[in-house]
Amino acid sequence: MNQKDKALISADILENKSYTEPSVFQPRNLLRESRRQNGIPFGKVPSICILDPDGNLLDYLQNKNRALLNKFWACYHSNLYTSEIAGSTVGIIPRAVGASYAVLIAEQLFVSGCQLLISITSAGIITNLPPDKKFVLITEAIRDEGTSYHYITKNERSLLSPKLLLKLKNNNVLWDEAKSWTTDAPYRETKSAIKKMKSKKVTCVEMESSALYAFAKAKNKNVICFAHLTNTMAQQKGDFEKGNDFGSLDALKLIEGVLEIFST
Image 1 (tube, rainbow, N blue to C red):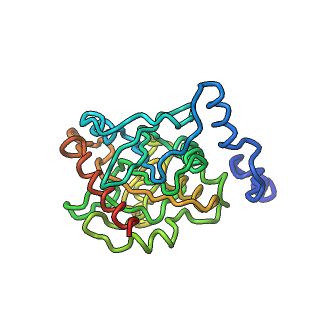
Image 2 (cartoon, rainbow, N blue to C red; image 1 turned 180 degrees about the vertical axis):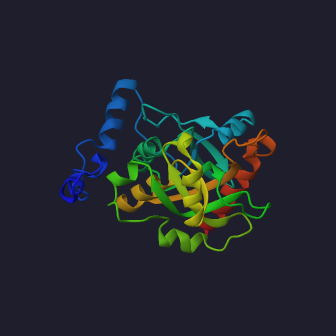
Image 3 (cartoon, rainbow, N blue to C red; image 1 turned 120 degrees about the vertical axis):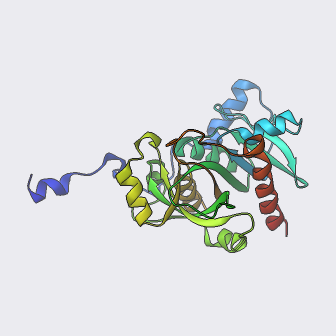
């Protein structure tokens, strides 16, 4: 293959991207049709919402009778629950796993009244942190998934917004700051790929944050991604242990800490 032929080769996902052109398919219109078909009343969701990909936090709150199904959420593909945490009413959507699904949910949340979205996902450990550290605030994510390329150009980095980082910075009691690797193929985390990520100073691997940050940048929305460091990608027995109540109490402390910051 000569150099001219090589130059013609391009990944399909990078073609036909007009980043300033609005989409024909709008989340607000989808929700309109769902409300019509399913008899869902019009109303807003809480201004602060949480993505709970593992679903353990919601399970805990339901077991404690602290979560109620939200009657205004019109998404075809998920349920939203409300709960009181640290004196604030928050929305929680469980099991929103993967970049494309997480961003689909995020698009719909922000046209439904959400103003701040917090994702708390389980993550595989690439570089070990001190043993007392359970959570990291993802400040940058490697874009090894497809969704982000529909929101920002291939040369842009997927970052937590500087405004949010300034508010959250240096809270090293509840979390450390870290770079993550977002993949949409968790069973293709090869030794060579992990070695490369270590060379890039990556702390963990997960499946949502780079796409959520790309969406946030493109749409000027407030999104914060945390990773709960829970596993070494099942390389040994006894992996994926999150602690008491599947890590729910620790997740609640994290959320309470974030809510305290944003209430001041």
